[in-house]
Image (tube, rainbow, N blue to C red):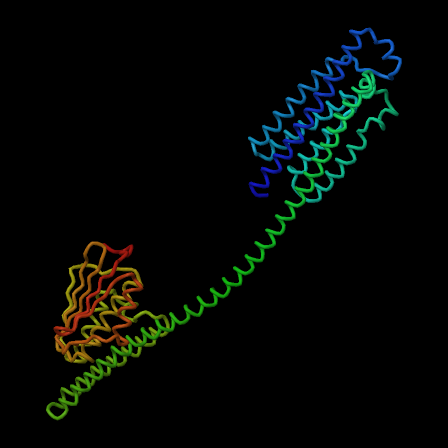
Length: 434
């Protein structure tokens, strides 16, 4: 139940408790003062002639009922404050003892406390079947604790005997008050049971609605998972395309440039041409290995065998020999050791930039600078090629940008004086970095 429904349940229980406490105190006090009145008027003989039993001590009956009523109120308030299931059950068992004690003390002239007791049990005990059993038990207990039934088997004093001591007009008032108390208690109990049943029905409907919402959300999550899987596949295909493009593009650019040099030398110096062709053959073989490695594991073969620094320098030497382009690499860092994805990105950005400088920029010289600034790596690749007044987003520059952005870095291109690639990459600095 929600908070508003809980307040209504507590209010109904409190109303039943107040009504029952009033009835118990009123009946026990009425018996005591009527007894005192009979004694005061010396009507004891005539009164005793018309009854089968009387309480041993009416004053003790009144005091016992008042004290029990006070404890019932305290126990009820205790349950509202504590809100702990185990303690609330103990409090309910305490109420059970008090209720039966009061009913017995009043010689079963009033059994309405049983309805309050079972109303409390219904709200506290968990489990639908148990609650149904308690309702049945409440009805059974209410019937069995009836005075008319029990008086057949044991001597009991009756409230009617004390009411009939008074004049007829006064008797009507007492009977009316007594019957109103009993009827109100029954009505409150019925209202309470109906409310609890409707509240539970509402809770079940809410649970069903929530279940359907969860089902819908689950279906949406499955759709999102399918979309995510497709996006992941697309991302992986794009990554594979970048790797193959970087590897093949770099190798083929070197070979194409070298072949152009061979065409220029073949008539002038056949021996020099042979040496150049031998270098191109070696570069192509290395390129084939790199392509195979990239396709299999998407990591440059050079980085598998060498450190980042050594891999960059080998790439520079191979390209310089194949294309006759002078490439200069400088770094202030003694040991270039980063995480794998960072090393892949740095290597591929340098490789793609060299390829673009040779293929599109017709550069004769390339300067590569790598330095550390706080937690950033500043990478600059500049060439003396033809540059570009308007920089278009081609396959190479697009992949350079994607690689840097995957590491949450930034990259810029400048084609005003040759072509310059400037990248800022936040680095986690590998565990083995010194």
